[in-house]
Amino acid sequence: MNPTSHSLSRRGLLVGSAVASAVTVAGVTGAQAAGASPPSVPLVTRDRIATARLPEPARFQADFHERLVGWLAFWSANTPRSWSTPVEVAGHVDAAGDAFTLHAIRYQRDDQLHDGFTAGRVDAAWWATAASLHHHFPSVRPQPGGGLRVTDAPAGFTGSAEQVEFAVAACRELWAAPAGTAASWREHAGRALARAGHRADAATRAGWVAFTRASLRRGLRTESYE
Image (cartoon, rainbow, N blue to C red):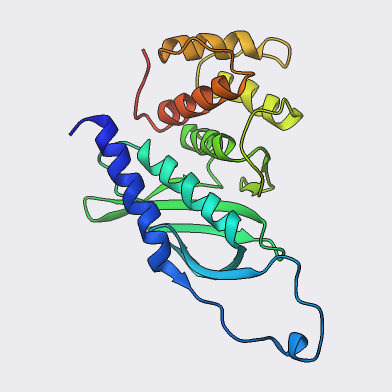
């Protein structure tokens, strides 16, 4: 099987399972029954993100949950072939249902459970997972303890301080460019993209997509780009 079909089959499995994993929210809360105004955006309860079970059911805005499903499919499609699709995701959903702090992703290999990402270990896999989140969300903020918090919004390069800070760190931690700064990161990211076979400016929409994907694959050791 070629890499493209491998990625597509894993992504299809993940996205397709999202429907089956939904837990329907039914009924009316006591406050609503008493005449209180309902929330402006209804929340849905989910016990999984794609194939990966959550520690307990959580309430999300529906569009945000779909965006998380797409992100996890992307993360899984770019992992080494020996990894299963994710089986567990640990994290915390904000009360409004439009923000999620990621703490862990677990997969199976040789019938054993392994951490593909864990908040308390800031290693190459941590930076790779941060790259995957930057690929799908415009705001990705490290939290005390190493968790990664994302909020619901369309993906894309905005030039925000947190995106630039990530790019500088990714060049240093994943691409061996310790001299990268906020002023020079585009040059270093461009060299990384060239190693990955792309001719693009990372500070563009297409370039950011390519840079975050290549950083994910390098950090998880799916490809070395040497």
